[in-house]
Image (tube, rainbow, N blue to C red):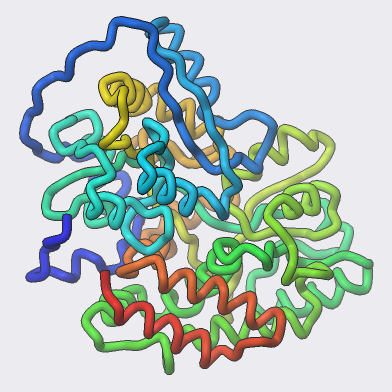
Length: 436
């Protein structure tokens, strides 16, 4: 894993996950060396599955699949272990270093997040999946550079996750408006919401991850609307965060703050406050994975909720972030690797992927392959039909998690007045230049 394809560093470029590539290239078979089938574990076995805490409802989406697997394999039970979303990555790293990590755990694609699989594989913590054809078949060609390094696979994607704003359409309608289509409309709606005793946006300002997600959504409709290949240029040293349109991204966050767009106490707010705030209409929208809208609809049946996209200067500038980012990996030092791989293979089945996507509100790989637009995302249909309007999460192709950390903590500094856009961008460049 440490020796990457330095002759083709463009593999780390921003991958635009457009419908054309999703439909034409999804689930292509990736060749791997066949591996010997591990010895079957016949006695009672309990394996641990660790995921971030599910904020979209009472039941973690993996639980029904865990029960279905155990029904087929009564000698294997699965115990779910959840940690707060913003602590999961560090918790897993600490456990791996201590030798007491779970058998299977949630990771993300690439290298640019604390819980990305890349550096964990470098350290030898992950079981190689290259020879498991069922795992290789889940990786779309359009995301191959996010999962394969030196033609080796160490994590399995489980769905396609759009990022947007879960939006209380009823709360917006009470203000006499719909989702904004330009940044100017956003600022105008902030005034309307404030005058009505509400806030247009809810942001977990105490969470670097949520801050970074917020900034990336703004960047999608500014930086990447203007130059979809910006990250490829940064990778080649042809661009820097300093002096780029990322300056516009951070300045817009300051504009949103000045216009009272965020809820009171935004800098100290946690992720657990976002979901109920949108449900109750105290804020009209929150920056979360789009899949959370399904849980909102299930829990507040009298409300009307949808997904909206943070707009750019013009309506045509809006871009959707959508990436097969969510993945699972197997602990290379686990005591029950055979059973862990068996459960992962179960999750790789098209029927399991469809069910998991339904439960967590994301897009199943099989749905993308068939060309069907998920019913829970009617407002995203135009994006899935136009390849130029879908962008992959940029942080996934950044060389280390420090870049995204600098962005997320930097946004909090903007909210508290302790940082300037220039300082944040310099910190991002410094982290980027440290490489892998």
